[in-house]
Image 1 (cartoon, rainbow, N blue to C red):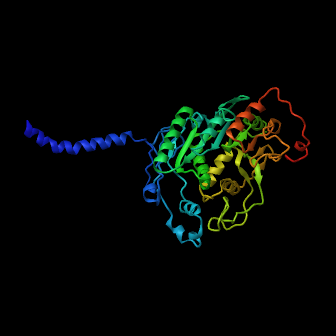
Image 2: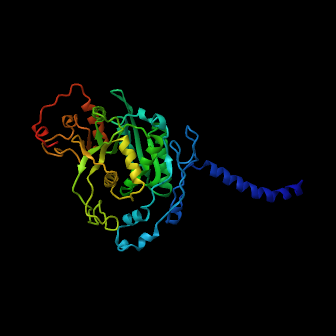
Image 3: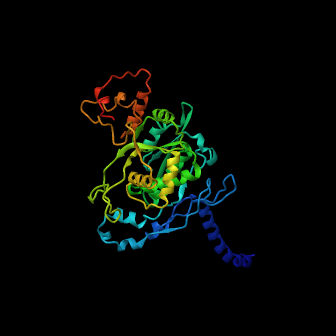
Length: 397
């Protein structure tokens, strides 16, 4: 008996660790994101998290309703040979290294948010809200106010928060786990495995448009905005329903216009754009990125244009570049105040006076508490407002 045990012992010593490793692997989070970039610092992995799924027609790969499989995207080391590259801030060096990368793993998905690709025309207004993982309080406030999923005037409003990742190592894993819990509870988060920074907002927009093309291609209209705005989404639905000859199948891209601007060349500025990124000294007319409305048709056009236009560090400008490439123009809407209300802040104006907001579509910027308060006030049936001459003298036109 003892001799038999000694014969089996080497086999046990070999097989037990292997079984243990397999068990640990199976219990790791399915999207644990141990990327080569994190280990080596020179690779950004774009392999899709999860397996291929089949769409209703039985197609695979990149067909609508399924997720494409992305291979690794290597850092473009040739960028370091560019004149003046070493003098650029590190954030812009990293942007240039990965400027060509437009696909990242989708960590949290909502393929049925619009009822499936074929039934997505049932969504009248899709609220697409850019949000970093740490901004839980903002998301929670919006879910209970203007971003609450509901019907208004018979039109369905659906909500999506689009996000990347934050932190590194254990902190990143912890935050991703919290996002997963929030995602399971509310079913309104799309998250990709890229660093959610200011210079990656353009990437976030492109990734979302790719998702839209796959999962919600026939949505009528979209609000694309930040998580620190107040949006009167009831007014938005009524405005969009009033459009003649446009049920979402025509061109619409409207908001607060930015005209006659060019690149900021000051390296200390948040909006610094060096010559290595853009040499041209002018920008096309575009809508302020804090919030704008667009049709589903225009969203599809922008996505198609984005396939051939290099990423730009300023996201709202990039959308304007795609629009210009398609031969389309944005329009101004006086109710979209992505740069803030023109009368506020002022010592003579109450920042939370609902009379300044009840007829607008969107205003930047609002705290979670201010969103709670304003949403209640603009829906107060007893609200009575006076005629402020500044509101009819052209200052809001």
